[in-house]
Amino acid sequence: MPTHSAPGGRRPTLLRRHRETSPLPGSRSVLIRNPQGPPADGTAQPGLRGELSTPKVAALSLSAAAPLVAIAGTVPLSIAIGDGAGVPGTYFLATLTLLCFAVGYAAISRRIFSSGGFYTYILKSLGRPPAAAAGVLALIAYNALVIALAGGIGYFTQLVIRMLLDRNPPWWPLSFLFIAVMAVMGYRKIELSGRVLAVLMALEISILVILDTAIVITEGASAFPAAALAPHTVFSGAPGVALMFAFGSFCGFEAIAVYARETRNPERSIPRATYASVLTIGVFFCLTSWIAVGALGVDNARAAAEEKQGLLFPGLARNYLGTTMMSVFDVLIITSAFACLLAAHNAASRYLYTLGREGLMPSAVGRTHPSHHSPHTASLAQSTLCVAVVAAYALADLDPYRNLTTTMSGVSTLGIVLLEALVSGAVVTYFWKDPARHWWRTVAAPSLGCAGLLAATVLIWLNFDTLAGTESALVNSFPWLVVTLALAAAGWTLLLRLRNPASYARFGSTVDDQEDAAPPPPTR
Image (tube, rainbow, N blue to C red):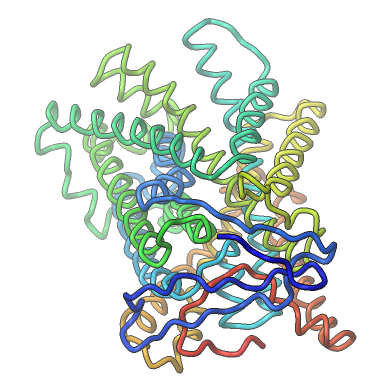
């Protein structure tokens, strides 16, 4: 569609196609315009665009959670130092909580379409200062996740090469190699990432299905021990630690909302992909951990996990599928880690892009590519940060897994779970005076999700040293640093309201969102 520039370099807002299906009963469609126009440098930006389908959006979401990596890396740890054979029950509790979160998340995602994700939801419901805090929190959490995965993929690739080829290359060139591929794909159209991740996710799920099926065929009904779901088993040992790992295993799927502007039908695709992601991840975690406990034996599960740790699932693959399939399993752990790396990079880039447009970050990262319609400058900035951090750890001769991956994973998990809790509360606030408010979708379910996620946040905070895998006082102070930076962003926004009301009034007007509301609550 041709456009004509308005005086001063601004482009008039184009009315988007009105969709006939109302997102919620009693609602009507209203277009929220972008009154501020392009970034401050006067450069007209085309905005993010794409044609992602529901399966591709779901693949992006599932990849960010990396089910294979989480199962191979987190489940053994949860069994060993958590509640032992009761891990399937803790995953079930986490799945129920996140399904409640998903109900409210789906409701608000039908009303607000933005690359700002959590930031925009909180902006439209709780106001500017909490949104600034949430934006900084999201930026820290998702960048920490990318950095953790960049170190982890180098480490795991090094292990696989050592096992299969009897070579021992350093980990950091392998990390740089995957970061380079990530940077190229993140720079280009999102559809490319969606296609690649859909293929990798299909392989990842297939190997888990094959392993689970082989164990069930061999063990029969004993693959599903009822004792693993009994309350006295689920709440034995350290259930708080197990729940912490269970919630952490889901981290990544919630970034699905940042693709709304690049999705063909966001009001349908985002909610559907959200439910599909939570259910798929939850079912696989519950079933696979349950079957693994059945294969190990309820009484022997903790001892086996303590002994084998990260080699637990490759060992099960060797025992039930053979040496060749164990090698395939090992290679797919690497592809799963890369899929998660790419999906997390895409999410981090889009948060950086949004905050660049808002003025919370340099305006240069708020630009989009003229032909790829991707946040290319934000993507390059995020890739550069990864290279810098990996290089610093390599030069300091620090362990990529114990010093880099575990620490950054702890920061990421804490930030993302706290964000999920804040968004659940934001959903209730957003719909409170809306005629389309529903007792379950917009009140009860998000309230239950918020309560569960706040409890998870407390557990993660109290057990951060376990999650980060270190007793370092400096590392264990990171939660306080993250919260301090988020509160500083909120404080800066309040100061802006006092000193420069005009700039404060424009804050939040650059979010590239289309909102269906009747009408929306005022942005405070």
